[in-house]
Image (cartoon, rainbow, N blue to C red; front, side, top):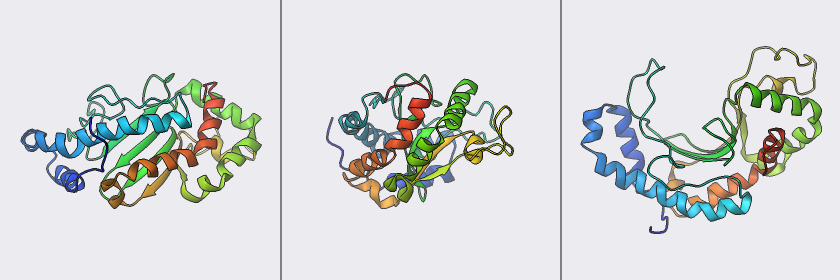
Length: 229
């Protein structure tokens, strides 16, 4: 596999066109373009990022496979959605913790979409057991959480996002100093970056640099979940 040199210039225009023509006939006629503009460079990126990611933590997987690996499927799961369009109009690349079984495991993430490119870290919609572990750990270790969020590179570049409960979860103190964090359904941090950055090999260092900046945050979540980091 060749070295990653950036996504081709027509990558984002292709995604824009897919957004405007999100149906099977249009996509089937352009599968070769999808392979050249998106899937092949994405797999090369994943392959090249693997040794760099291993230096941050050996417990997150970068798997360069067409299916079942780090590159998320272009096909949407429409079974429970009102939106029946068949294709995702972004590139999603996830580097999950190897002890996690699905997308709800702790992980690093790269999102490429016209006007909405970002680096992500954390855990999206943890199940009831996992979210309870994180909340219990927050109650018992508030100082370490504040320190992780205050890590200067993290605080400068990342924003905590995701959904939250309207009220503190049952069984947790309403007046706790971390009451807003205890309400979180998602423990995700995102760093936005300009679209132009995807067209160069320097994207590798931008992404790895972002993952490094989130190190204390990710370490805290893995510790809360009793996972190695």
